[in-house]
Image 1: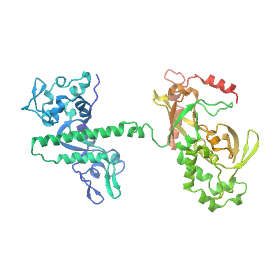
Image 2 (image 1 turned 45 degrees about the vertical axis):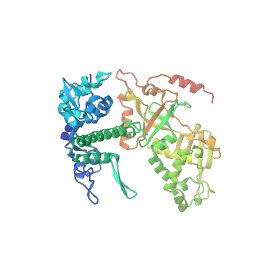
Image 3 (image 1 turned 90 degrees about the vertical axis):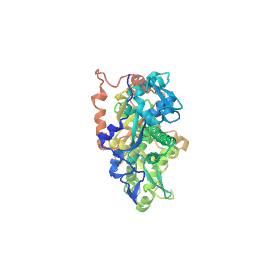
Image 4 (image 1 turned 45 degrees about the horizontal axis):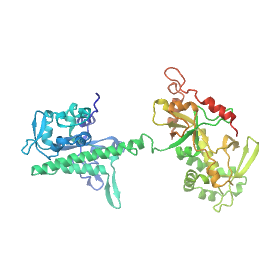
Length: 501
């Protein structure tokens, strides 16, 4: 049977050359950390990077239970071992079994540690599942008991000032408590047991805090590694793509993402492009009468704050997405949008809207810049359950081919500035369109399944994503079958061909 390994702090100290924290005092002088304290630069390093990874340790005055053992086995099981450890009873040891006696020879953690190897665990702890005791029976005493405590790097337990008072992470409070208990001088047996018990309880409190910090659905790993709250991450429902031409935009290596998803996943790039689109020079180049464009007025209206506000309006108020953009603060002179409808060969002339600039900014930031997204559906069964993809921008439900400023947009949003807020809010695509042959690999279907998508920002990461996207490992299975099985593509295609528009 496989036994869960217990943490060996002595080995950690030796391998990583960890240093001991001996003082609960944080500062030795104003703006100078105590060299022996919880924020010591000698112990935890001086750079920000070092203080994320370098640990220390606290030497305990006694051996107490490893917190994992104490929390999950000893306290849960209760019984005579716990009572003896906490000094609640005195015991004698007879043939490996602890026998309670008023004049017993053993009491407290110190005695329990000394006689541990002579104790028959199965005779002293009752359980319905003997396997749950294997960790106590088969693990060495040096791992079941600890006399040292790991101190996490300062980056995980920051300290600062609030309202003129110093505030500390709860972790620091527990560490300070343990260091303080080390210095307590006891004069009676009862007080010795009380201090020892407090040290054990403090270790359990620390273990419980860290377990909650990293282990819950809102814990550290979930937030930082499993992408619940990572930067540039969005969750969407998946839906079948619509085939409306002989050259569909959505395919194996290109996925359709809603406009708001792209704005969320690439917001810094969108903001940069919006600054260019709403600059004096650009507006002067698209507005039919450049003399109406006032540089000072444009720079004052479309400053950083206004651009950030426009992004938030688009994201949070779908009914306002056809909001007209103006040349003046009184909203009397709209910026005019002139383009060519390539389907009807007619000129479009109307006020420029928020959707226009958001769409063009998104298109430039992703399609023109050749950026990718990383999409995954949990749980991941194998490496094909997550994939990299180029981006097709999904905007309104109905789109038109448009030529604007010498750029052709095959699926430009159909904008009607006079539409009601209710109609506007219902006119945008809100789901991801991916190739049907991706479904089997991600274990998904079109009944409301959701995926998480992350925008890939750096040029290096995008180059690596494209390399992986086209690699044999992502396109061919080990048995030489295609990684993209043909399943419902034919049905979806026939439906698209015969659907009544």
